[in-house]
Length: 539
Image (cartoon, rainbow, N blue to C red):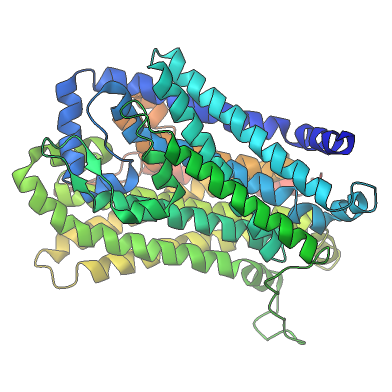
């Protein structure tokens, strides 16, 4: 027991700031959202109107939760719960991989395994650490709801459901760390599992059965294949069902138990999915440092591009459907205009999807820059910099590849959008909207790129958590700010909220120029400061 507590304390010392930031940030999102909803939708009529629009509009349901009535608390959970859960899920997967596969890569796990703690005790400490981190996050979220005067049982259930989803993905992260050979591979597997289940829950809600008064939705069977669906079906502040949260906890426990068995069955440093063997000789394409960066990051870039293509197809395929719905339900058009500021239902639908696309492109850029930090931390950057490759050139290559990745993600989405509108009569105006909004998201994603590069130069050990946190913060402000009535200046602090869009026949450039200026200034500053920075090892 003393060994377990010592290892638990070591993990707490390494992670206390990150866990606190994840927990407090999630709780603040819950608190601010509740206040915003109360101000913007203070009457039952306002909430009923939005719910009717959401139930008739698959676009809204894909990116929101499960409608459970027009009461203030249930309405709030419909709007915000999936995003609270996704924050808990990201925290849990990163934590699990860092203390398992990540420690094996740095050699820390081998040193601990040589002590009486062996190999099973560190795994148990990591699982317990993740469980306590999710318990803290759940308590903070419940406390945020209670602080605004929400009903007690609903607040406790909302916090518990959020933490329970995090526990499920703690199990996912632990299992991914056993299957994959590297922490990058484990994180990628866990994140793609997270994104896939998020989309599954959204589709399951969109094809569910609405109530006669258009204030509730019975989710389809597809939703029950996702941890996010289990959390949503707790229906906090309405039916207050606790058993779906227990289902999440049970699945997390099963995944952790399977992972524990796999830990004992494999060699330290081994994996159950072997790495693909490389070539004995480099190809002619691998002739320079930028080619090496592309080789290291192309899998992630192409994965994000596939996601962009799917968003593009959905954006225009559903645009015509939403236009038909809007003809009979003007509330749909009102909500879409409020979210996106666009001039028509179809333009609003495309803008909504392409806002999500901007987040995907930003994630691609951040992941490329984070790869530079991983190469530095693992010691593989030092031999390269010992060759005739300067530090500025080395970082510049990552920035260039990141920009290429952003462009590829947006280009894939535009190609998907073109496929979605093939055969439609009014394809010229739709393609114009697609091109304008897509180009704007390139500028927005580039801002996240240079900010992460600045973090890499100034605070290298905080690059990864800071880069991903900024993306999540920008997503929260850009997607939820207008809906929750946040101050305009706060909403416009998010790059994805000030990108150009098509308003009827005109193009509103909004904050394009400051996005371009910020990108240029950030790129110059990061490259200039990199000239004098020392290499920072893992820590």
